[in-house]
Image (cartoon, rainbow, N blue to C red; front, side, top):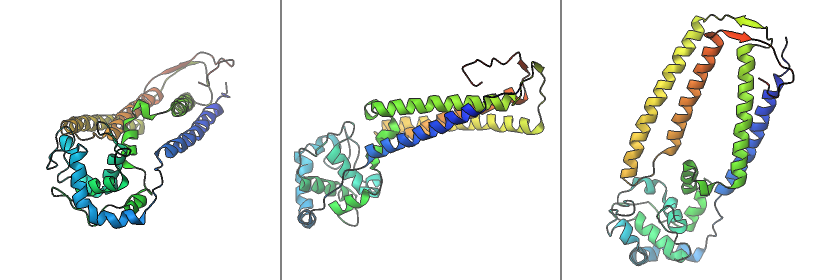
Length: 285
């Protein structure tokens, strides 16, 4: 009997793609940085004031208590000789202004001059050095990219960072995508025509190769996942942010390769049986 349900999985996948695009727009709106107004007076005073004012703010605002008088770290991360902040000086300004984790936000406690002064003090002290002092123009130029602090928070999927519309769209997208993929797999594994009875299958050299490669990839991604977890535990010990994005990628690839292996097994290595197709069924598979 010919199947008439092969279209619905594609409809579900197209709808999931549309929902995913909407979700990306929501995330893009959330991660878009606020525009920076470049004040010429502030730029002119930064070069003259940051060496003295920056050190004063670093001490008076309590930065010394967490990061150490020599930037050696303590309750807060080490700042001395930190290559990461030198590669992205705007990140220092963002953290001082907005805060992050245990680091409080100083945007409402310090003036704009003080924020730039203490950021430049960090970027020019204890072995740190950047070619030009950090100015509002530098921050404005950095806004062509998504704020690194926001990206790191997004990669951690902290619950309070995800709002209800995002949760709804993400869940609905996953449901539609799962529905469509299972339907497509059903048509691929069982064929466009269903014939009642037991169907014997015989594996081919190509299917055997596919199974071996898929299982090999599962083992490879498992090893990479374990190595990443070990490295991230070390990062936590050094008070650095772990690479949660790679953890999630490796975990997803393990599940994906195992799913492909199961699909190959059912298609090429497992005998099937068709009893009857219920035309009134609510699911396409």
